[in-house]
Image (tube, rainbow, N blue to C red; front, top):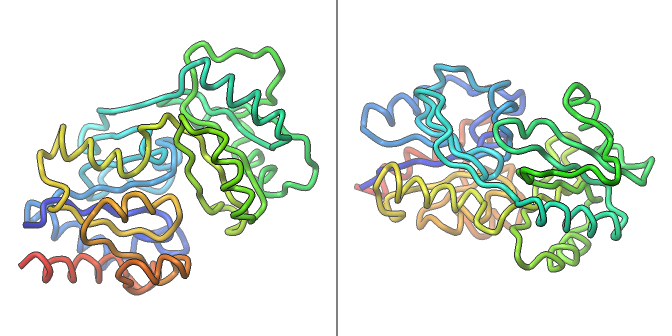
Length: 275
């Protein structure tokens, strides 16, 4: 029996203009009529989610910041959150500085749209574009600044070089390293550092065991990017929209793109699979 549908947000549920088309809204409302829990799993912070999702959007839970937090949408209660400790945060800062990376350190939930930034490059346009977007919420990192409460995550902006990403990832075996394609230029790699038990998959598993009380075999997922990989591997029935990377199209069931209501096609197909 299908109990839960989990979808990525940008590039999956939303079209290229950042909007949810009516067929997808209708599908979400139809899921509620069948008693199926609707979950969005996104890399966005809660602040960023609120820029594109209305208070009455037809969803039950949102896994945000790539799994660092979970909010129940009906009453806007944050019901789960994780963060890096102060020593973990400082150790990653030190390592990133030694590696010569351009990076950001995000405050703890629910204020993780605030961040400090450190850069040694004048050529990282994606990095500076993000600073411009969040200029009201960010400050330069000054050596000696402490994070007594820790941080939600650190984010380094890298060129589109997967080999570099993986070479850097192995330097942090005790932390969760998530690869995300920059939503700003669609090319740069965002290397996101979280506690080891943070990911969209962990968020889904937490909901299954603590809130929804269902088996993971009763869950489907729909995604489009590298930060969706762990949730796509978690669920037995997983879909990717056709605008996903080629290596995903070869591994998971493909549905039409996010501009062609691929989310609704996936849900309809899932209903058939669970009958």
